[in-house]
Image: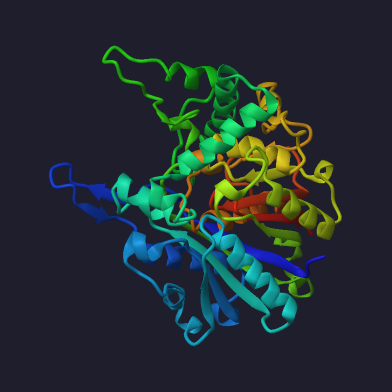
Length: 415
């Protein structure tokens, strides 16, 4: 069992923090990459109830700051959080959308080694300074470039292959798949409406509302356009800016902070082959199941023990497959269970994406993993941001990088 705990957490608001001149197309930054690192770091340290001088190291997770912001070598920016952090060791982790979860795992290893007592983990991304086409091209760099990115494959296209494989494997007709995906997306929109930090605080909150957007309007336009069949616009997560941060220490060092601490009880980190065309079974997350098994075993739990989960709904198909990967539904059945009303805030077993998920909360890729952990941590200590879990003793974060390549599963427990 892991010997690390979270004693502080902070999540900035997520959004598109830019102003665009409609005539010139010029983008003006209204909350910078640098601003968000400082806000998140200061917030987490304050929440932990310690001083910046007590932080021994800083680990930053960020996916593509060089391409999004022309800024590499980003970890030392954390010095600006507080003068007391000057001369501390700092480094950056990059694992696509799982960058800040991997940064967290590096912190866990640092705590367990005994080298560090307190570590600050920051996840951050600023994506909206680029036009959509350029932003999509940057993200494609996290695919297998020779066989995917260089051939014009985008991430909607890559996850659409999982959707098509899922439909074929389980005999699901396109019309039914459309309803399953819309139900999963609507659940996240509904939850996100109550999250004050969410990028999108309003949206179609029922399957029927989403399906109605699939129809052509009087001008012959579709508000829920097809992006990569069968995935439509409302099946895709948002392009967001934001940051989140955590303060990690050892279980033995929690002391009087126990009531506001959570135990990182188990972690699982498993990587799949990067290129989709060399993988079998494009209808399940094989590496994800390995990560789940490892995390559950280390934490001494089963899926039945989990009360809430933040799953990586970069696309609605991934939310459905991830629900099965975590053992909350049998393979091929999660879509049906979502349609039956499962996984809501009122679910007697497990609530999923109570934050609104990537679909509504937002998806600043380097910040997503830290955000998942921060929000579950807040649920477990009784300080839920947005929708409150029906029960909050055990929570799970399932964060993926790339097309379900880097699979990170964390079990958090109330202390």
